[in-house]
Length: 335
Image (cartoon, rainbow, N blue to C red; front, side, top):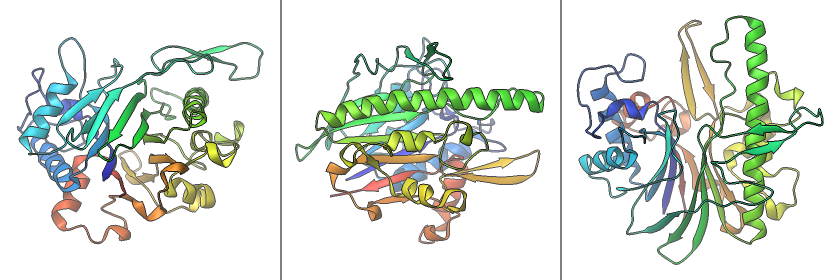
């Protein structure tokens, strides 16, 4: 079985309001890439993945005028993907949904939001004292995680959560002081979201369920200078680094990053900074699994076209991965 997570940069811009694919020369949401170029590239990537299921981050918008299901079903059918059934949870107003695209002949999937005293439903509010001032702060998700119950063809059940955590980037900052203030505020909110998510994970694992948490976490140890203010990264919280082993989650790339910090050469996203004219690389995308799934490190792979470990990718796939998104798919293969 192959399960993947893939952040597709501005997937929404490739469809009209009716969910029709825009194969034209208009600009996509990607810099200097047309809609036709990006759609063609994504068709190659999704076809070559041939996954049983893909957690799509930044999936097309779901609102009054647009439907995520229609856009992704049209995309899947156009390129002949066997994963052509779409499931979303709570839609949001960012035009970037979290969607599960899967092969219904292999997987049965249901949206299954959970609520508890410790961890409210992800479309609700979470109260926590973020700055130790004896006052509760209210936290929400701009993109509520997608909680799923999956039943595989062999009868095995997995609780899966698709995630797109708050970015730490200081968007909108006009001065260095603004940038510092926004960076700290964004990191504080991201850590609160990860604590909220970890409480749900703990709840599932204490119920002896198999768990998979996958998506874009916008974080990792050593990624910015403000991490020391808070003591740990979102990744460490989600993995349950300070909990008993039975409550922990595992991803080999995250484990490598935790072991090496900024010296880790593994990355899942590549951004070009037009101001500095430099390429920025970061490990942001993960598939965390509970240890009761019994998976091994070699079961994971990042489809990174510029990593020497991806040398087996042919020219067509390399080019498609570079045109398709600024993130690369993370793939998990298991029996």
